[in-house]
Length: 253
Length: 253
Picture (spheres, each protein chain N blue to C red):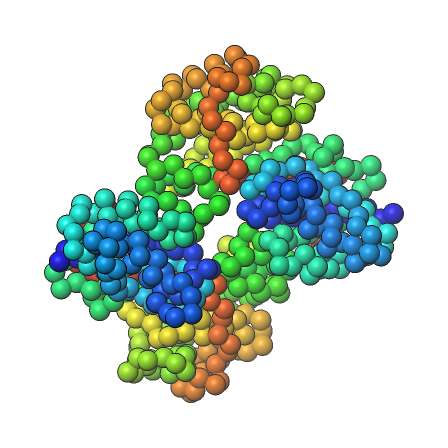
């Protein structure tokens, strides 16, 4: 069966998340149902690089889809974008998947961006796409604190209670906090992340940015390995899955 | 009665436009109803710098509101943002209005941005906030054509049939077309604009960008003064009201 990689953008607002669930529409269901007409009516299965939660967005989710039909990637992209209307899911590119390649297990690194709208007035244009924090944040302190989390550590303190990973050892390659006018952006990269890891890190850095905790605190939380000591879980709507990297060349069309 | 200026951001998607209408919810109605509890329950009247159409957004609409109560501007901003929830309308700032000042008639210049998403895949994250044009546009040709519209002219060819302005003489101070990755942005400034003027200009420049018309065409259309010769009216969703400038200092809080 021909296997394809898809590069997918979506607005997570109306979805229960990437993964199919009983309680509502998922991005996975939208894509799989859009692919059914290209698959003799049968709904194909998909796998994603990152199983984003409800309300989390993606600029560059990577998905594997297996179809009965052999189609030029351009036509697959166009057909999926036609059949997935009017949902806010768009296939930016399609490519033939290399043999043995898997978007989740072959990933060499993933990138996320978390956006905070840091101004007194609540969001209108960015509603659903940023965490609203009214009081001014000390971004330099947040960035300094973030650097204490880089490298290979046991991130038990920053994982969700429901996290299903076997162990909490992860290597954080990047965690940058920067201001762009009213927006504060946190950009992070790692080979893989634990469930809620980015949102728990953001919630913990926030306490530093608000001056409620010292710059040393997020590192101390890490070393304590105790989830109950970390900050709040930042809301889903500020999070966006940016990319997944692979050794294999994917010829996006 | 105390008069206040408001600086307002809104997502135009769910509204029938700025102005109150019988057929649905307007931004004006949301603001006026949010102000009623601050006005002894009576709905105050508002005036805006630009009466944006249905689906048109604003980053910096300027509004005049008259209230019975004398409130510190900070409190007015906070109260309006509280009472206008959950609508995507946010008061970024409030100021005491200078005597004789009017957001519409005192304006020295207004700015708009029009956004085109120029890529094969339809929008997901920018759905409702950009015009989707799948084939690559020649942005240099569009910019060159745009320069032929600068200055003081009779813009009859670019006004809506329903436009209520007495005459079509307007002075275009800026009309820049630039590419930012997949986005093509048209930024324009004038003391005032005719109804649909920006959207008709964008639709006409598009034909140049697609190679269907020469760079000289938008200027020839202008000189013809005949609306039926211009390009299509670009869709509302790509348009955003950016600012209105005044001689008076407004002390936004």
